[in-house]
Structure formats: C-alpha cells, structure tokens
Image (cartoon, rainbow, N blue to C red; front, side, top):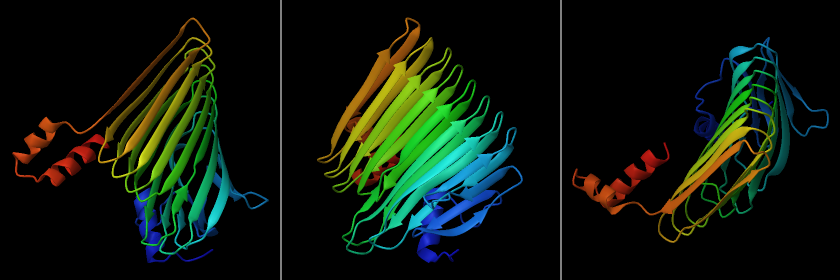
Length: 308
C-alpha cells in the first residue's frame, strides 16, 4: 500500500466527499496501486487473482453500511482498465461510492477505464454514486471511460447518481441494465463540459419482468466548444413502465445531440421519452441581474441550480 499525497487527498475529497478515512468498507486506488483497504463483518473486498480489479461481496440483510472505492491518478501517462464486481445479497440496503479523479500536469494522456458489474439480489437496495473530476495544467488529456452493468433480481432497486462537472477532456459512459419482475432503476446524470471536451453517454435498459420500472434522467450544460451525445434506449419486454429524459443548456459554440429511444415488445409496456435543448432564458438572467449580479454571476447561479 502507498501513502496518499496532498494532490491525491484533494482528488478523493472531490470525487468521494472524503476528508478522512471512512469508517466502513473501502478500497483506495492511486496511480494503479492499492492505497488502502478495509473490510467489515458484512462487506468483504478481495483482489482478483489476475490483478485486474476487485470483488465486493455484501452479505444478505446488510443494512446502513457503505463501500467507498475511489480511484485517483496524479501522474501523467498512466492508462489502466479495472474490472470490479459487486455482489449484493438479498434484502441488503447499502451505499456504494465510486468515482475517479485525474490530475494531469504532464504532456502524456492519463486514462482510467472502469468496468463495474453489479449483481443485485432479490429485495436488495443500492444507492450508487459515481463522480468524475479532472484537474492539472498539463497538455496531456484526462480520459475516463466508465462501463456499468446492472443485473437486478426480483423486487430489487438501484439508484445511480452520475456526476461529471469539471476537467474531464474525454469520456464515454456506457450503462447496461437488465431488470427482472418488480425491479426498479433510477438514474440521475449531471454533466458539464467546457473547452474542447467531448462526452458521450449511452444507456441500454431492458425491462424483462412484470412491474419492472426505469427512470433515466440527464441534465447537462455544454459550454465553449465542447460537445455532448446522450443516447438512451429503454426496451420493454413485459408489462412495465419506463421513462427517459434529457434536459440540456447549450452555451457559446457548444454542440449537443440527444437520442432518446423506446422499444415496446409487450402490449402493456408503458414507455415515455422527453428531450429539450436550449439556451439560458433571457428573463432569468434579467431577474437575477436586477438583484445586483453581473451577467456572468447570473449565468453561474442558473447553471448551479440547474445541475443540482
């Protein structure tokens, strides 16, 4: 294990809201090395035999416990792919906090590709938080390509909070979910790009059992010369309900492509999609400016509220 330096501690505070070592289970990864690990009586974390990632096993019935698995990169030129598998036992109710922060002050690209697979057993509840953050003044890019796979058994539920607000030059987020009867999935994506950044979010949600539900919502802001693509597909293969929504603010010379799509393969599948892209309303700016804010300050207030 390695000792975290000041930059790495700052990155962890940004992506996991941690300012000290958490009390529950955790696995810290820094510059492709294990930087700290703790397990509990109900949550075990083990490294895969081939060194490609970790397995997190949560016992049935576990309540009010958390797992933190932040990744930080503070060296230029690091490129890694990590495979993490989570096994959440029946009737468990847990919080899992992930995310990656890259500080690149060099001339080479730094990249982290994380593949997370969740096996959520009957009746289990999971709140999953994943934040991405980039910093550093080097010419090398900060690249993050997360893949999330969710396999949800009967009457399980999962709430996913995906946030990327600053500093990531390129990201391709891919999410696949398979839901059995009574399973419930809620996804809340918050995204802001600036400079010449590019972000692609792709979701494929398959509602395979009666009573399965999904709600996939993205809010995003594209500034400067950045570009975004949101591609969400919900497939109803049983009596189910699904909703996907993309609500975006476009600024400067930004570009946004929204592709919500639905596929119904059952007469009782109820699926809805919504998409809206537009600039900040002038009356909103004027109202805040009459309160003493500059135009730039008013824009920031509106954006912060929109992405909250």
